[in-house]
View 1: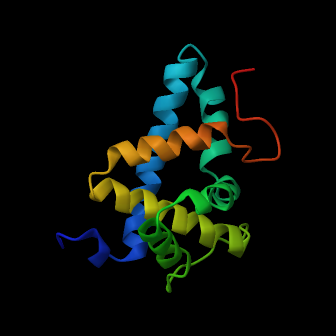
View 2: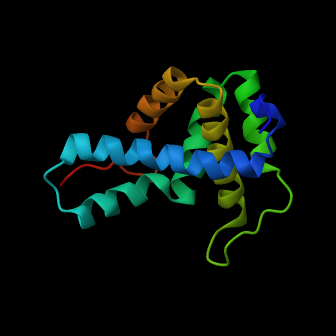
View 3: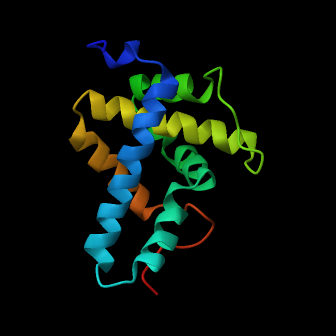
Length: 136
Protein backbone atom coordinates (compact mmCIF):
# COMPACT_ATOMS: atom_id res chain seq x y z
CA UNK A 1 0.00 0.00 0.00
CA UNK A 2 1.31 3.48 -0.82
CA UNK A 3 2.49 5.44 2.21
CA UNK A 4 0.92 8.65 0.95
CA UNK A 5 -2.91 8.62 0.99
CA UNK A 6 -2.83 11.02 -1.99
CA UNK A 7 -1.53 8.10 -4.07
CA UNK A 8 -4.60 5.98 -3.32
CA UNK A 9 -7.47 5.96 -5.79
CA UNK A 10 -10.32 8.26 -4.77
CA UNK A 11 -12.79 5.38 -5.05
CA UNK A 12 -10.65 3.33 -2.66
CA UNK A 13 -10.57 6.28 -0.27
CA UNK A 14 -14.37 6.46 -0.57
CA UNK A 15 -14.64 2.73 0.16
CA UNK A 16 -12.74 3.27 3.41
CA UNK A 17 -14.43 6.58 4.20
CA UNK A 18 -17.88 5.02 3.91
CA UNK A 19 -17.03 2.68 6.77
CA UNK A 20 -15.28 5.34 8.84
CA UNK A 21 -18.21 7.75 8.60
CA UNK A 22 -20.87 5.12 9.28
CA UNK A 23 -18.95 3.90 12.33
CA UNK A 24 -18.77 7.47 13.65
CA UNK A 25 -22.52 7.89 13.13
CA UNK A 26 -23.33 4.57 14.80
CA UNK A 27 -21.01 5.34 17.72
CA UNK A 28 -22.68 8.72 18.20
CA UNK A 29 -26.19 7.25 18.04
CA UNK A 30 -25.44 4.44 20.50
CA UNK A 31 -23.85 6.90 22.93
CA UNK A 32 -26.84 9.25 22.64
CA UNK A 33 -29.65 6.70 22.37
CA UNK A 34 -28.21 3.38 23.55
CA UNK A 35 -31.48 2.11 25.00
CA UNK A 36 -33.28 2.55 21.68
CA UNK A 37 -34.15 -0.59 19.67
CA UNK A 38 -31.62 -1.38 16.93
CA UNK A 39 -34.22 -0.88 14.20
CA UNK A 40 -34.81 2.70 15.31
CA UNK A 41 -31.05 3.29 15.59
CA UNK A 42 -30.72 2.04 12.02
CA UNK A 43 -33.42 4.46 10.82
CA UNK A 44 -31.59 7.36 12.47
CA UNK A 45 -28.27 6.19 11.03
CA UNK A 46 -29.65 6.12 7.48
CA UNK A 47 -30.67 9.78 7.82
CA UNK A 48 -26.98 10.63 8.15
CA UNK A 49 -25.31 8.15 5.80
CA UNK A 50 -27.59 8.21 2.75
CA UNK A 51 -26.21 9.94 -0.34
CA UNK A 52 -28.66 12.85 -0.10
CA UNK A 53 -27.52 13.70 3.43
CA UNK A 54 -23.85 13.48 2.45
CA UNK A 55 -24.57 15.71 -0.57
CA UNK A 56 -26.18 18.30 1.71
CA UNK A 57 -23.33 17.96 4.22
CA UNK A 58 -20.76 18.80 1.55
CA UNK A 59 -22.77 21.80 0.39
CA UNK A 60 -22.78 23.12 3.95
CA UNK A 61 -19.21 22.14 4.91
CA UNK A 62 -17.31 22.87 1.71
CA UNK A 63 -16.29 26.45 2.52
CA UNK A 64 -14.93 25.39 5.91
CA UNK A 65 -12.63 22.75 4.37
CA UNK A 66 -8.95 23.40 3.79
CA UNK A 67 -7.71 23.67 0.21
CA UNK A 68 -6.22 20.17 0.50
CA UNK A 69 -9.53 18.76 1.78
CA UNK A 70 -11.44 20.45 -1.04
CA UNK A 71 -9.04 18.90 -3.55
CA UNK A 72 -9.58 15.41 -2.11
CA UNK A 73 -13.35 15.93 -2.15
CA UNK A 74 -13.24 17.02 -5.81
CA UNK A 75 -11.06 14.02 -6.74
CA UNK A 76 -13.68 11.72 -5.21
CA UNK A 77 -16.61 13.58 -6.72
CA UNK A 78 -15.06 13.51 -10.20
CA UNK A 79 -13.65 9.97 -10.06
CA UNK A 80 -14.13 7.92 -13.20
CA UNK A 81 -15.32 4.35 -13.12
CA UNK A 82 -18.02 5.07 -10.54
CA UNK A 83 -21.33 3.31 -11.12
CA UNK A 84 -24.34 5.20 -9.80
CA UNK A 85 -27.16 3.01 -8.44
CA UNK A 86 -30.32 3.29 -10.56
CA UNK A 87 -32.37 4.69 -7.65
CA UNK A 88 -29.80 7.40 -6.82
CA UNK A 89 -29.49 10.96 -8.08
CA UNK A 90 -26.15 11.06 -9.96
CA UNK A 91 -25.18 14.47 -8.57
CA UNK A 92 -25.93 13.47 -4.98
CA UNK A 93 -24.10 10.18 -5.43
CA UNK A 94 -20.98 11.90 -6.79
CA UNK A 95 -20.96 14.38 -3.91
CA UNK A 96 -21.41 11.51 -1.45
CA UNK A 97 -18.45 9.72 -3.04
CA UNK A 98 -16.35 12.86 -2.64
CA UNK A 99 -17.50 13.16 0.97
CA UNK A 100 -16.53 9.56 1.69
CA UNK A 101 -13.18 9.98 -0.10
CA UNK A 102 -12.42 12.90 2.21
CA UNK A 103 -13.31 10.81 5.27
CA UNK A 104 -11.08 7.95 4.09
CA UNK A 105 -8.22 10.32 3.31
CA UNK A 106 -8.32 12.03 6.71
CA UNK A 107 -8.52 8.64 8.43
CA UNK A 108 -5.44 7.31 6.61
CA UNK A 109 -3.53 10.50 7.38
CA UNK A 110 -4.29 9.93 11.07
CA UNK A 111 -6.23 13.19 11.30
CA UNK A 112 -8.77 11.80 13.75
CA UNK A 113 -9.17 15.12 15.53
CA UNK A 114 -10.11 16.78 12.23
CA UNK A 115 -12.62 14.01 11.56
CA UNK A 116 -14.16 14.60 14.99
CA UNK A 117 -14.27 18.35 14.32
CA UNK A 118 -16.04 17.91 10.99
CA UNK A 119 -18.38 15.32 12.48
CA UNK A 120 -19.31 17.68 15.33
CA UNK A 121 -20.16 20.32 12.71
CA UNK A 122 -22.36 17.82 10.86
CA UNK A 123 -24.34 17.07 13.99
CA UNK A 124 -25.50 20.69 14.07
CA UNK A 125 -26.40 20.94 10.37
CA UNK A 126 -29.77 20.55 8.74
CA UNK A 127 -29.07 17.67 6.34
CA UNK A 128 -32.68 17.08 5.29
CA UNK A 129 -34.45 20.40 5.54
CA UNK A 130 -35.37 19.60 9.13
CA UNK A 131 -33.65 19.51 12.53
CA UNK A 132 -30.89 16.94 13.10
CA UNK A 133 -32.17 13.43 13.95
CA UNK A 134 -33.25 12.78 17.53
CA UNK A 135 -34.58 9.83 19.47
CA UNK A 136 -38.19 10.99 19.30
